[in-house]
Length: 227
Ligand code: ADE
Image 1 (cartoon, rainbow, N blue to C red):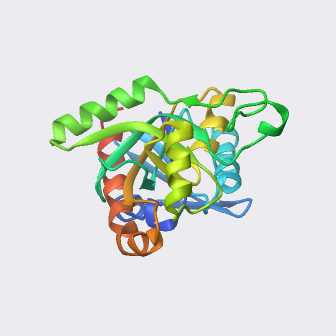
Image 2: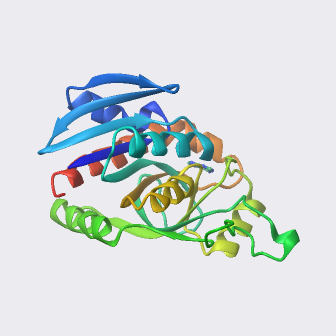
């Protein structure tokens, strides 16, 4: 099967590049690594931060490289108190917290032509749960929201958590979800917590991002063996 592995930053996909011999292809400002792993053809890339960057790379992975499934790996800020730094969370559904045409009577997060939330693949989520069980790892699930903002403010954090019933926040997942859903490509969004998205979250992020990114990537690598 052709599987895309997508992260936002080099740190989020580095564990793949280190573990698996890869070939490189450049296209539209993106670097794509190709590899054979566990009987699959992998197409690995980092999009750079933000929803537009992520949407471009996800579209290229689907349209140019014809991937049949996409697994996103990376870090997120926790919006609820029950998450610890380094904990793994996969998205059951995603929304864009910064998409707001409420002035025209739509609910915040409403995507024209779509709904607020995009659901992830139940099949891939099940494989993740089985992987965690077999490895004896704690894997949580929840609502993940994305926006083109690093959230490091307690009031903003509380608003996002309440408005979307969200568990974690990041800057790409919901745009990848929209792209995959438009092309009918099953997708999975994995995140490890790097910070708690409140006041001075950037300090935790700087300290824990790399380790959390590796935790998430290592998990996805194991998960591929079960696909
Ligand atoms: N990714 C990791 N932490 C984040 C935060 N606090 N806000 C947005 N994206 C993030």
